Amino acid sequence: NHTMSAKPFKVLITHPEVPQSGIDLLKENCELIQVQSLPPSRTELLQKVRGVDGIFWGGHELLNAEVLDAAGPQLKSISTMSAGLDNVDLDEVKRRKIPLGHTPTVLNPAVADLAVGLLIAAGRRFHEGRKKIETGHWENYHLNWMLGQDVRDSVVGFYGFGGIGQAIAKRLSSFDIDQVLYTTRRRVHREIEQELNAKKVPFDELLNKSDFVVICAPLSAETQGVFNATAFNKMKTTAVLVNIARGKIVKQNDLYNALKSNRIFAAGLDVSDPEPLPPNDKLLTLDNLVIMPHIGSATNRTRSEMATIAAHNVLRGLAGERMLSPAY
Ligand code: DGY
Image 1 (cartoon, protein in one colour):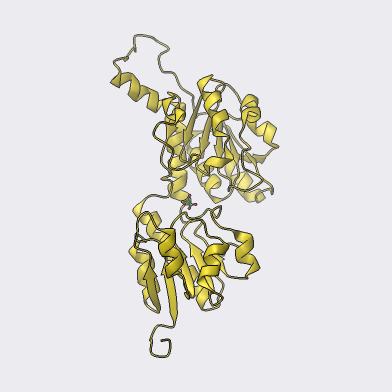
Image 2 (spheres, helix red, strand yellow; image 1 turned 90 degrees about the vertical axis):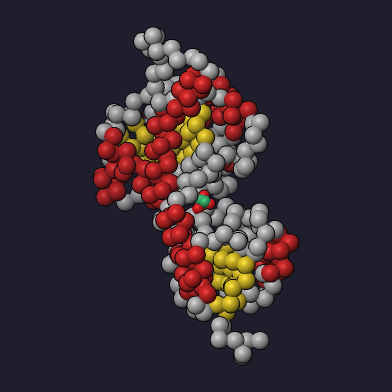
């Protein structure tokens, strides 16, 4: 009963483990309803979403017409707690003119740190080295044993060069790299290019000139499957591929073949297709692959800041104000 309630808005939190920073902000003037099941249940979500004014979208589940229909026409504000929006039917949200926010930017440092880690781990054979020890093949009497790729004086190519890509390039500049190349739709500001020694190039040039290729573009119809056998065949045989974006940007079977045949040197992945990757996936048999279970933003501070921003987005949407980070 709204007239009796001190709290004017009902907000659904779609996940039971949303950081407290987000909950605290929302509970000040919202009645909170929270999905309790883990993994979050679609049935519970669709029941609890009925009649809410705002949604804090905590997980990676599909946010589509089904959810918006179940919520009802009073819904006036949604924010995801993620940078990526590939799990959102954006056209459907836009068509209904519902303000939608997300949480880019705050996760740039954490994701960039992980990307640098993967780049070095793959280039210097961390996974293979560990296996050599475990299997009793510590053979450093060979002078050319376990040689990897230098970061020094390398060309690093970015497929997508937004906040995350730029944060990676900034970190790598202290490794004395030679040059940053990038492929994007739009050129980044001249000052950023100068600061990072970065040059926009066509995709083919990115592939054949880069020693390290880092994927940091959003998943879209345009980027899906772009890294396929044709692309791998244009890369240097010494090249290392890093993907911290979305698994579907890479044709994973083609990547497997490129790594297995040493067509490229190694890869470092934080993302795969599908997620979770099945424990018996053939990718996991490769020595020259370092892989993490999508943990780019997984630090206490980053997740807490993501929750804060998502909560502010929801509150602003409810108040009819511009969100901190609107998705459109
Ligand atoms: C993001 O924020 O998009 C990360 O991939 C976690 O979902």
